[in-house]
Image 1 (cartoon, rainbow, N blue to C red):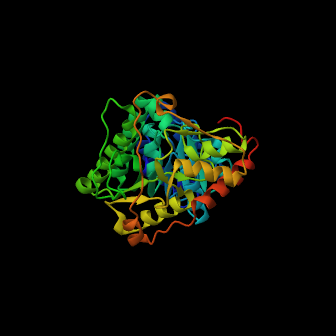
Image 2 (cartoon, rainbow, N blue to C red; image 1 turned 90 degrees about the horizontal axis):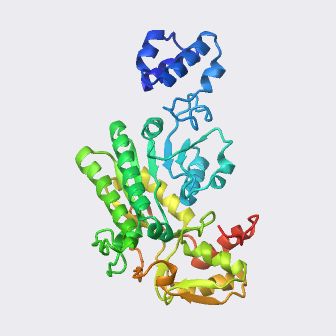
Image 3 (cartoon, rainbow, N blue to C red; image 1 turned 90 degrees about the vertical axis):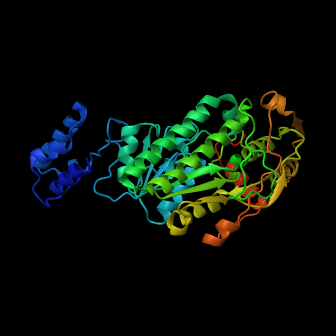
Length: 401
């Protein structure tokens, strides 16, 4: 397939004469693919190089192969889940640094709104499709140099309501990404979660610490367990097949474009505060979290992907400024100048009977600091102000998501 693309591209640009049979032999496949091949060859013969440039090779994906003009550009980065909250910020930063970016996202939890401002750029390309589309993903892996794998089921609400979808999405997409990347030896950075630490009590959480997952009949732990298996598989590919892999465990990343639809606490609190609605705190509110700025997260991910010392290792990424959910609610009210009361809702009402939560979630950032000099750039107050300003600039900042 790649041989055929090179032959045809050279012909289109007048660099050499491509034999018909060589191209046809290299492009054997479905009838649709053969028709596309012949169409391109005819265009080359007619000397219409511009037409030849406009066709992108992607197996059986009408969403991709004619809507994106990759031409002969050297695409470097692939982001699965790139229309999501973190993925869209990552795409922005990579583009800002002068790189080429391809995004694949089925918009199940992402949004086309997150990448609308990027769609007309010549260095940005996207496919609206699932990362479990093997032929399409194989083509995109071929086109890329480094893969950021972010596609996953996210959010406590989604995990509780759809455990089968959570487990299958997380495991199957990671398995496929690693399998295809291994064939081409493409570096892969896997995004995991602080959820893998489960019920652990050794604070702060260290990458070398034990993972203490709750019982399987409590569906809430399925997400953390599935992400832990993703980690095991990624590191096994490095040890056994020498596929360069990196794992990052993200700790409550927040910022513009994050939605509260699936249980994310900060956008939910800010939306409620802007509408002067009661701020709903689940449980007694004494559980604590550490919130990391999305800009810091994507900068660290890129730095780790470029550092040879990161391969085969796991890294915590986030902020170690700890805050209880009660304190967070009060800060949101203060930042937004809201009149909202705070309303405590039992976990049994918020999610399901017997729901278990992580009481504290604090990262040990020593490893990532030592390797890339990572340092959080924003305080909680600064992050809340930035997110509040972004939400107020939306068409309907208080509309239910």
